[in-house]
Length: 121
Image 1: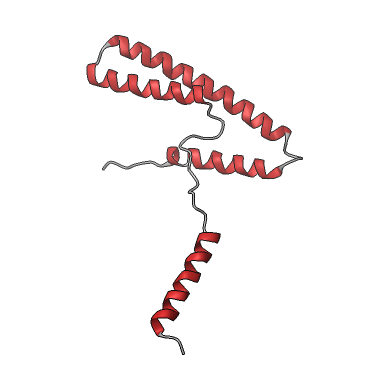
Image 2: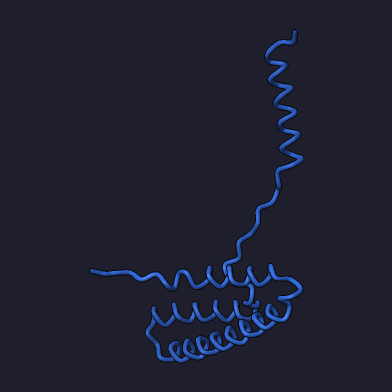
C-alpha cells in the first residue's frame, strides 16, 4: 500500500490537471455601456462629464454652454444609434431571435437604475 502523502499528492496533481484543462482562464468583461453606444458616443459622454465637473467647480458660463452643447449632441447621437441598433435587431429577428432577447435584456439593464426613486424624508 502507498503512503498517504503520496496518495494525496497524486490526487492533487490530477485535480490540478483537470482544473487547468476545464476552467476558463479569462473573465468575461462587463461593458459599462449598452451595445448601441459607439466609441464616438462614449467619447462625447466622457467629455460631457469632464465639462460638467468643470462647471460645478468653477460655475463659469462658458462651461455651462459647452455642457449644454455636449449634452444635446450626446442625446442626439444616442437616439440615432439606438434607432439604428433596434432596426438592425428587428431586421434580423427571423434569422437570429436570440439577438432580440439580448437587446431586451440590455435595454432593461440600462434603464433599471433610472427607475429607482429615493425618498429623502
